[in-house]
Image (cartoon, rainbow over all chains, first blue to last red; front, side, top):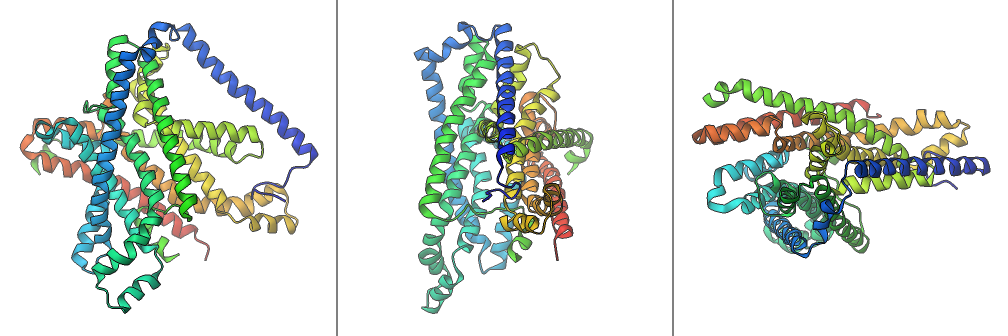
Length: 278
Length: 214
């Protein structure tokens, strides 16, 4: 019995070889880590002065407030993005050609343009009226909304065709079919993808650093400005993000198992026609 | 429109840097990503674990934080390459995790029966791999790989936050200098990115069609 397309089930000699290779890999990996730690030690990066901040209550609070702002930005952005995505995702499936075309253009535009560019532009134009946090949220909402529009479209199309045909047959109008029949079933298929997108948005809130929007990265900047410990701060920020994203990934796996099905496949526009033809 | 023509050289310089970042990091990420994918798919459990840790750690760290670490952190360790290199190290590592996952999903897309059939007609290991499994895996890898490269194109804009004058950096400068023409500038630079993205997805679509098995 073999579980991989690449290999046969190992025999006794292969197993011995694997064990040896395993030990070698482990030693190599540990050596790399040890080298890194030694280098940190040599350069005086492991002194209390560089790391003490992160157990000092006042500064832990700065980081926690930053985390809170980051979460607020991510939640705000995803909520706005859901509205944006719903409108244009359903728009892409509209019976009206003009609506379909406009939705397609809007979605493709915001998917193809760098998020940072959107954020920087919104910020330079409107920062006086809306502030940097909202510039970040709006930029994030436009980009993630465009991605979610694709998720909505794919999710709705994944509902078996018989459902919409049956809805039409009993005399529901297209709007009603969407609202009563397709969306409630589609949401179930979309949920894991929506949470995955939330993880992406959470990671992208770090871009607030560039426009000095409040959040984790900005809190980090404040700390390293005071203690001159950029490397230590960077590593701590990374750790916080890894834990937060790891927890959310668990939610995604749980949702997938619970709701069944696999993640929706979102492919670049050019390949869509072929993907659908397949 | 005049703004764009008057500043054409600045904008094109910006995009040239964007493209250089894209190419350098595509290569870097491909090399690292292939290495990690082969570890991830290896029959040795420890190798798989090492690759899994690498992928989880670097994939879940925002690219911006990774750049902060290499950009500010490497000099603190006495390693002082230029801006471009320091940013590229972070960008290649970050992107390599997505490449590794794309490659892995490609191999996993090949049905188990293919390899079993190859073995049962007596093909040795290398032949099974090179004649049956890999050709199919590479084909299945094209769409996710294109997505990764498109994401990388957009991610190169992060270099703007660290003093590299690529396209997004130019946008920021021009919008400040020519406040009345900012929409023209915005759509002009957006168009530049869209062209790059379209070239990648067009190329991928071509490849996919070309490699399709009847």
